[in-house]
Length: 340
Image (cartoon, rainbow, N blue to C red):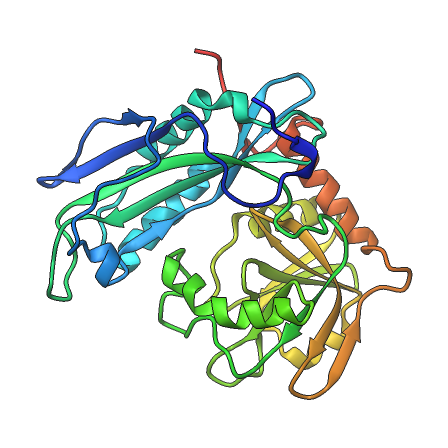
């Protein structure tokens, strides 16, 4: 195996095995191991026609002690259950989800990047409606699978400042829709605006609420947070995906003696923030250097020296230290993969 770990992009690379499980006749079967990167699916499967599909994203890290650590798998399992409830799919039990994740990582442990390579093993649990329907209704059969792939930083800049754009003509998701669950349709809806933003040199779009265009929702691939007056502030909205990384950062900010607030954030407030960032599993933290309000030809800067702010730095390094096992994990977030 010849992989340039230090220069991996955030893309797909084949690994040795994936893990699968089928829901048929009202119950889940046994976990199956496959070496194929293909799946057979009925042409009338509900996932293809009506969007019955949900996924998760989490990572495994190799520490300097060479142990492999998986970050907050049980929280991802709970979130997939919420997604399943949102679009009427069979729920994957938490125990089955975690077992499948651990098995997929163990079978592919040679693909977990070395410590300090800047890369990690990305884990993608996927649940799809595999049963055929031509009427708009839930499937009766489902496929749950977990595959893994080694990845570099989501944003090619890594932990460096990037710029984001506000473009009011686009919505990511609507209140009371599917914005608060992790389904593919939300990401499909963000593709057009995201590509336009990238073509203009931005890392992402900062979406405002779709009803009034007054409040910050989230960035295309990540949650938003702002720092001011020793307070970590992140939006509250019915169309925001509850990020596990964001939840972790809120806890760490409290540990640092900061106040934390989850509340509606008027876009007009953005000019008062000392630091701004995007956070999520893929990016961890991507600090924002500038927000451009494209429609109103306004810009808001969040750096004086071209470097991420001190709070973002501290949060980033603290979270990474827990994920890699460099510091204690007082919350039980990390599962150390046992050799079997």
